[in-house]
Image 1 (spheres, rainbow, N blue to C red):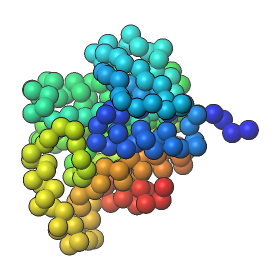
Image 2: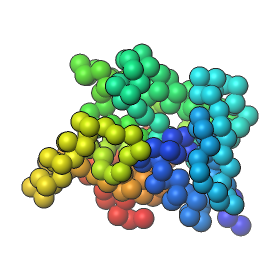
Image 3: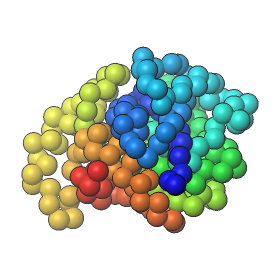
Length: 223
């Protein structure tokens, strides 16, 4: 008899997370999907359980963070967060704490959205933070850990990000010219990233896996 699986998703209100949450609810792999966030989403589904919580006090909610596969789509920008410290808290501290708690609660897989250029030694603050997040999440005893490093994300956001919208308008027409070594720099649809995350989880492949944007596109096409 196939094991009944539970998925947990953090960041289900975001660009990638919104697509992923819908995919998880339609997937036959999971009989229960737990969505955690600061507010309840306007979504009702028989397999969905929403848990509103304060991410600054993750440890107080440890008993609610039990799942087989954990999907983390948490992320912000320095501008939206208001400071480098606030950005670090969302993109590093929350992610690492979620990994620590869910690993201790027996989760098998942790699948997280990182960023192209993630590097603990980077001189770019954003990339350095993402690199540190990856480094610290890898220390947790998951059977499988997947880091997704997408290029520029395409899709409709709730929050306006003028810089990213401008970059999308510039880069999208050039996508056809990005072949070979340049392929990993192609803009990628957020839905494709979400599909890639679900496909990667469905393979139950142990180890640490880093997925650059061109690899993500291939995984997304397989779902």
